[in-house]
Every structure is written in C-alpha cells, then in structure tokens.
Length: 416
Image (cartoon, rainbow, N blue to C red; front, side, top):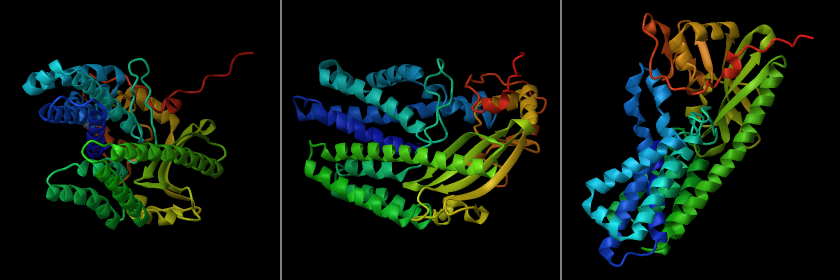
C-alpha cells in the first residue's frame, strides 16, 4: 500500500489503543503516552519500507524488485525490527523512557502498537497484486491478495477523518479535513475515480467525522466505526476479487479451449468494486507456448459496462471490447522453451523471474505486464544488454518463482 494509507491506519490504531487503556494519573503523563503510542504505531506501520536501503545490493531493476517487500516484510524479521524500534524510542526519548519504566499501561500499549503496526503493514501490503512472502524462510512463496488497489482513498477517509477531528486548533483541523477530502476529489476530476465513489467517500467522511465529534476527547466510537468500515471494505473486495478471477478464467478459457489457465491476477480500481484490471496466464503444453492477456473486467456490466470504467485506469484507446463485461488491452505470446532456456543460461534473468508473475519476453527485454506496457516498458523491465558480461549477482533472495508452473517441464509419462 501507499505510505499515506499505512500512516493514517497506524495513527488511528495507535489512538484507539491509547483510548482503550486505563488513564495515567495526571494529564501530562496521559498526553505523553498518547504521543508515544501514536508515534510507535505510525513508525511500525511504515518501518518495513525502509528496505529501500537494501536495493543497492543488486543492480536496477533487480534491487527494487527483489528487496522491496523482501526480508523486512516477513513475520520472522518483524521481530528484530520491533526490538530495534523500541530501543530507538527508549534511547532517544528520555521522558518516554521514564514513562515506560513507571507505567504498566504504557508498556502494554507500546507492545500492542508495535505488534499491530508491523502486522498491519504486512496485511495491507498483502491486499494488492504486488504480493509479499511473509513466512520466509519457512515458506518462500509469494502470496497475493488481489483485492485492493495499491493507492486506496477509502483508507485515507475512513481512518484519516476521525483522526483529523482530534486536531487542534480548529483552523488546522479544517485544513487537514480539506486535504483528506480534496485528494479524492482531485482524482475524481482526473478520471481515476467515478463520481459515485467520491459521493460514497464523502458520506463516509461526514458520518465518521460526526461520530468522532460526538465521542469527545476520550471516546472512540469514530475510530471503531472506521475499523468496521475498513474491515467491511476489505471483505467486500475479497468477495469481488474472487468473482473477478472466476469471470476472467471463464472468459479466457472460452477464447482458447486448448490452453490451461494458470493464473488470473486481478487488481481493483480504487474505491470501485465493480471494475478490475486483470492479467491472465495460460499455458499450452502441446504447443510449448504460453499466453498473457491484459484487460478490464466489470462485475456488473448491466450497471457499469466495462467501457464505462474510469478512463485513466481503463486505457480506453487500447481497449478491444469483447462483451459488456470484458475488454482486452493486449495479448502476448511466448515460447516455453525460450523462457526455460533463458532462465537456465542467464542468471540475471533467473533472478528477475523470482519476482515476475506475468513475464513477457520481447526482443532484448523482459517485462512483468501487471504494471502496464507503456511503450513496452515499466519499472520491472530488464534489458539484457545492460547485464552483458556482468558476473552473476550476489544477494539474490531465495523467493520462490511465481511462475514455476511455466518454468518446470511436465513430467514424462510413467513407464508401463
């Protein structure tokens, strides 16, 4: 997820933990505990993204692809990160250290905010189709939620508005609220969001803001409602994601009955459970080939046909509308033999394949087409000429190959 979403969710959860704990004996300690828990949960909710310091271990784009959402995004390595963050706050904040020494509720709150902050970061990153591998080194498979767009305004509104209601003075509170609501409005005007989605976000903002205002300085009804909205949204998206994958798999199978649909990766449009981007991966063993298709699927074509999905994300000039529910953006064909041969002969390409879920080989480059094909390139594109005569890279993490199903030849039939 984007770091604004991580931040507002972390701050809201830190505030909720603070408000559910017993009060400190005086106002000064109470305010200090609030600042400590908000800071610790916010920091824990963003800390794993410091893995960008690891990206120089490999040449671009491999460093980013293999080390972002890498070891710092695992359950095992969250533990030393939490200890490090606790130690930093303990050493660098003397008044907080004194509070933690004297207050059991502050210590409990700190443990909760650090645990929840790291857990929320992993969970939120799991929700989209970029993926994580949280159980490495015990299980190094990539896990993809395929539920929520990587930049999701609903989280900004649901968790940001109740927190904004606590801001003082009032003029600053209004500024924060204006920014929170203004960002979705900007994206709506730019055709990333439909007006219906913006109206829903505005209603959620008004409702949650009113709830938190009524809750007062110690109540948490607005924060609890925000949590319910967030969980409900993820549940709705999870159901819609399953429907989208099934619709794509069925449509693709009808296009070519001889192929086996290995994967249907989907990503929702922001705050829009009806429109989804998809990339399908098909294999045809008899022809030793595979095919990738990119497109848009609408789950309710009678209400919102695929041609009506927000223009900025639907790439309408490239669409080939097949039905009111399905539009294709591109189709790519590849040779399984070429893919496997290059993996065996080119160690840089083999490292890249530890990330690629939808690998397309074209000319002297390869691209994961989940992230678009603007002039055939995106941030995942690896140009083989850039690595010619280079030694094989060190520090390649041992993530499983997302497309091991393409890379492994079928077993020969058993002898009778």
